[in-house]
Image (cartoon, rainbow, N blue to C red; front, side, top):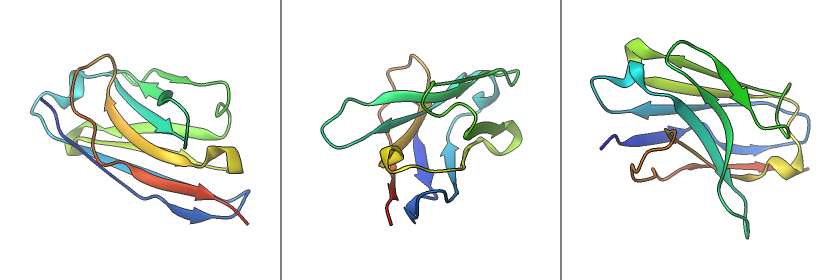
Length: 114
């Protein structure tokens, strides 16, 4: 199994920005399609963005144009740049290989509030 450590969350005002980081274990990280997910209180966890091994990206409608996913295969890292944050972006954010049975990491809390 691959293990994940997310970081970079925090409290930010509406319209602000945050950059999330995810460190993943595994010697063949570069071949994985990686995703960022989020879970708000009382809601199911859902996919926010994903990036393939060759850098192709997909975004949920709710974040397209505001969030950017990227990766550094040499460092086994995935990033999520979040701009123009809204209160509805408040959630715990996780990263994981897409369509895998890996255990979830601890996540990183993002709170958007004035």
